[in-house]
Image: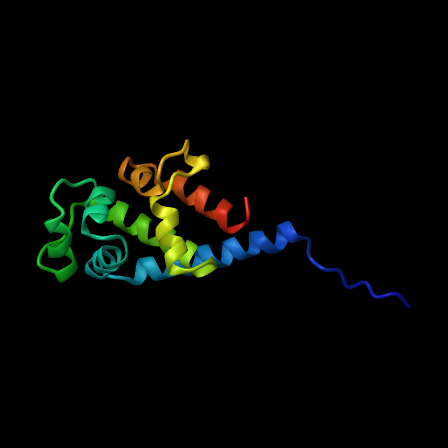
Length: 138
């Protein structure tokens, strides 16, 4: 009797990879205090780039957030959380170095803008769509 077991199509497998990585990234992001998020991004992207992502002009403010001395405005916190979630998604699927390079490099799905800049411009959803497509091999 022939076996009815089938192997999932590659697209289904990679879509599942994106979904699992995205869920992990979301959980990690919502559980972290904003000072931890600021510290992580500062450590992995640098103070200046983290400030640019948060759409602020003073990079030293990131250090104050990271130490817990102050907290960012709501809009800046949204951007930092989005940046961390995208970073974690790419890192989970690839590596820390790939995540960093992906955040700062030109991205054809974002009209050749860097994802970090798009987040600063408030295009968080576009960046997440591009990140999922990257993880899924598109």
